[in-house]
Length: 179
Image (tube, rainbow, N blue to C red):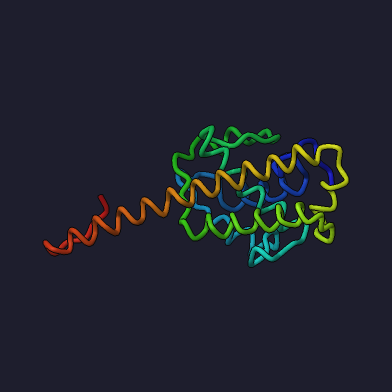
């Protein structure tokens, strides 16, 4: 595996996932959706159907999705080594993700992290990083992704609960709409 940093976006496998998204999904969009991106990556064999998929490609792609979501949330657009990155992301104004999709992605990242903590090197990505001089930095990166995904999922669940509450209050007058 060719890598030049601790992020999945700094690896050949990660850029393969970005290339797939760029060619088939991201161009000319203003709004992107985590579920749609995950479905595309699954259909192309880059992401497993569930969080138990532990191939190098599936794990790296799951981390790419988590990093894209993280960097969108923190910086407003992701940063990675690609001449086209700025062009692709400059038109995107919204990145949506249902709580269930964030939760599924969170579980995948947590599974990777659990294998790191257990020093279970049967997972190719974990094996690579356990034997790397940058292992502790990568583990810290995983912990940051897990915290961010947890926070985003919890916030999305709170927003859904508020919308459900607003909807139930509106039922008294016969209409149900988002606040």
